[in-house]
View 1 (tube, rainbow, N blue to C red):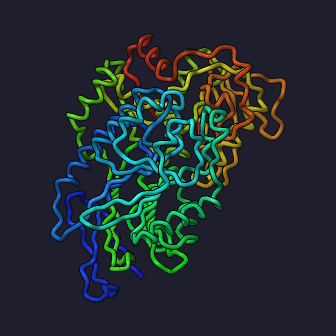
View 2 (cartoon, helix red, strand yellow; view 1 turned 180 degrees about the horizontal axis):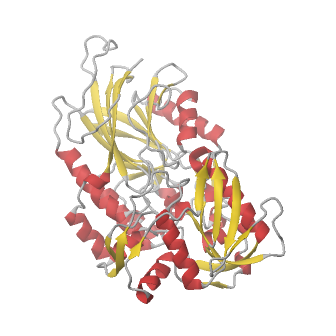
View 3 (cartoon, helix red, strand yellow; view 1 turned 30 degrees about the vertical axis):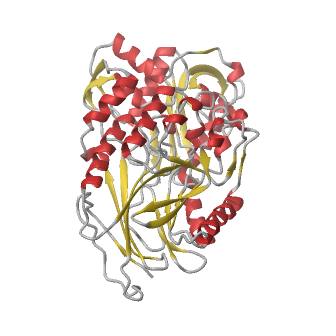
Length: 513
């Protein structure tokens, strides 16, 4: 058994403290490794700038004992269709000196222009569980695994894409000929890569996983030879090393450490390890740190502004609460303001906005275009769809299940013109429609009306029924598809009303016991 080190107040510059351990064999010097890891940055340029400052501190710190330094990403660093957003993400990974990244679902978001950014990628892209058609540009870039040499030590590195990839893609039809393997086959894929690496004399194996924490636990227990799983996709914030939670044991009884650092670049991690002569982890320390404590790196900020342009002031925020903790299943006052702007600007009866579609938060003071654009890197176009009450209720019920779903996918729906509760079992209750005059009408969730129609402002991704919300698949019914995303509506609000806004949770969505 390894001895995990539990860390309550992490400090990036503190030397890793390793507890004494009886597994040192033959008096050989252990191999020490320190892994700087990120996941699910989602093109968040401002947090990438903060992560750069943290990365520089990691690079400049010299441990008292010889230590291999590695840097990895577990996918979803890219995001959406906008080429400049993804150019920024690639430039950020290059600046961070990331060695390799898993192919998350958002690495497949830009199928028509992805060839434009591939030449700029100075890092490996890994996925062992997808068969990419040779005509697709990424087919020549993506590898299943490789060997990373550091100070004469060899680390096998494997990557995976999420098994639910197709349901996550806006243009899933373009990937119909690519085969993504299910979890059972993926576990076999990982084991096959481990066996190949072992045959080449590699005894330290790192998996860059974009499967989600639940599946990562299965991989840890159902394979043999994986030492570390750097996770992503489910946006878990995994602190420390806790036996039975993120310290598990493989089929041979050897320890496997699982990590993950939330989403949107709010955190990064440093995993410190010792391996014995057989490549078995004997000691581990996992430091997960908020990027908010680091200044934006000025040189990288300058690089990004050359790509994105100089920011402009949009409006003033008088008050904004801190960012929420559980992005997919927590009522979000920042999203409430956005979805109200959508309804207000486009004149819908109601407006719906996915929790996963809001990738940032407001702060008190001047709001500039860089911050606002950073909140919506997807750039999904808005549309107005005539949904029945039955369809709306069905969508709310399906997304409310995120409270209990594995990885909390797809996330609850933020609403304007509606009010409802969700219990701990992921069931909705007390659903009301609120018209533009503030009058409330209770909706019978057990007998919703098929004849009642709500002109609904929603983005084109959800209007295509993505995230397995087939009841919303009515893009062909759209009154109009606009050529802008929700940031346009926020800008228009401030253009028409210069009053500084106060962003507060008004209780329109409540999670109740």
